[in-house]
Length: 111
Image (cartoon, rainbow, N blue to C red; front, side):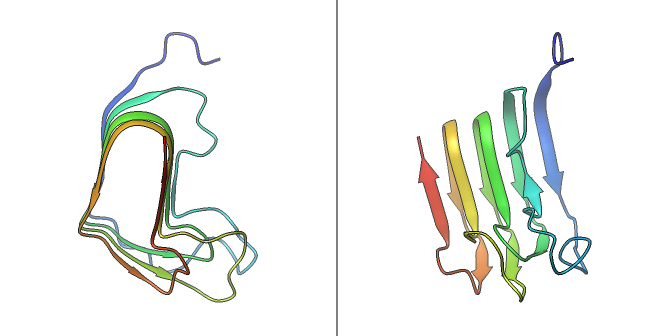
């Protein structure tokens, strides 16, 4: 059930990934809101060190999102359509100062 739930003022900060996913075939972003059924408000994703076989950070269904100061590296073998930071359907985003290594496209921001 998603009725009455609240995802507000969420901070994802200071995490260090030492392995990209559960296995080489794990094609999920390191930080992901892609399956969220609840809109988030006031999301900060900062100062993380991420490894991924696909997109590093994928945020959807959110507002007032800040993504800054993260370091993300694309790990082989890659899968899907990797983008360093993907922001889709977000009302108000500030994406800045991220170091994205090995991604064919660093950012994809769609209203």
